[in-house]
Structure formats: structure tokens, C-alpha cells
Length: 119
Image (cartoon, rainbow, N blue to C red; front, side, top):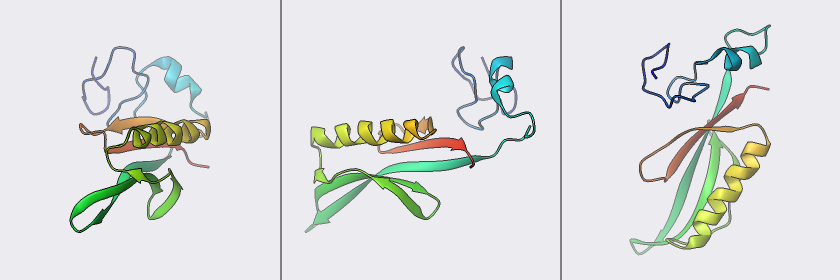
């Protein structure tokens, strides 16, 4: 199926467009607050912060940013460590429990975008 707003190709079970956030199904529209048809979202970007020493990647950690404010971060571990992936999963889980939902992930997995209704 394709987004009814921007035309992006979407999975058949998508409730919202992964590109523009536009609701795709009646059930998704029904969950939006009636008083706010043009719902506004906060956008959060998760990215890997890599610390280097002598031009070598040394340590890395996940950070979550809303605008210019860091709202959360994971632990710092050796770059390439399985712990980095675990920290990402823990950070994403914590953010989802606060109402954030995943919108996009880049092809390398180093950047993820999440959104939630503005409070």
C-alpha cells in the first residue's frame, strides 16, 4: 500500500506513514484526539556517539536527542562490542515505555528516529 498523504510505499499493516506520520487506517485516525486533528509530534533522534583516540574508534554509546537537548544515553562500551547493541535495545525500550514509537532506522542502524505526541 502507499501513503494517502505523501505516496511512500508502506507495509500493508501500517497505521501511520513511516515518512510523514500521516494516519493510514480508520482505526489509527480514531485513536487521535478529537480536539486536535492535526496532531503534533516530538521527534527524537537516537545515534551512536563514537569517542576516538589517535584516529581509532575506541568507545561508543547511544544517545537520544530532542532538538539540541540530550534526553537519554546508554552506557559507554568498546566500539563493536555486543554491549552497544544491548544498550541500544535497552534505551529504545525505555523510550517506548515513555510513549515514543519508532519511525525510521537508517540502513547502517547507527541512527534511529522516534516520535511521540507532544505533551
